[in-house]
Length: 282
Image 1 (cartoon, rainbow, N blue to C red):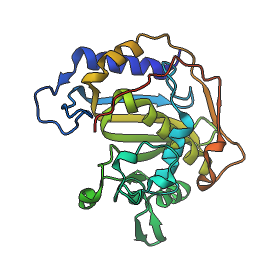
Image 2: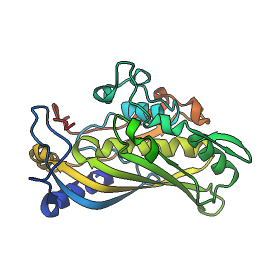
Image 3: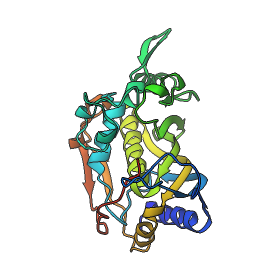
Image 4: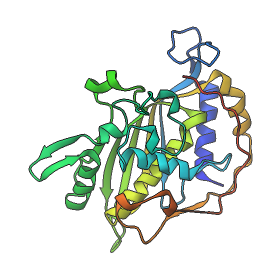
């Protein structure tokens, strides 16, 4: 059985059994019909995935891994804030007439600062530090820039990534680990999507710096299930759990900036049926 399935089921059941409700409170999200979108939520959920054991894709339903990879490349490789650079339509409702989502996501990763070694944007600095000072405790990206929040069409949900290197086994490569900080998450719509995205980011960065992809620690401040998602979640977590797929990258690609979705190799990904028509609160 997929360990990602086990973690997901445990997390959802805990929210349903022990979470608190926002019903009756003043909430920002609303459903398409104008009704307030209330949630059942847990504070401070932490899940740990070890990519040396398996790739953390749900089998309860299919996660679109190529689309997830496309979006993570849009943010960290293309460093774009324009939906015309993205194949999926996930961000369409937050884009203006030019396709921009404001000073959000890739825009923040592209911001440069001057260092003694030269000028770096956030992602280039991560790669430089992992190559030159891999055991530094200062290797991270952050998209939650207070001075730019007013110019973002949507505040970043998954906003901070911290990289940390540990020694591998004797004569083995160092291990690259990641902490993903997320202020808020719609568990049904986005949980495994984000987990798989950042697992792929970890794999690509590890390949670039010749390390082994290790653990992904996912910290969610506000882990919530929307009121209209509750019956969908109950049905989903009752499904059979299958074996995790084998997910790898094209072995010929080494440079982070050379990866495309064509370099994603997925084998043995068997899942339950997709849930269609999930309502999204905006």
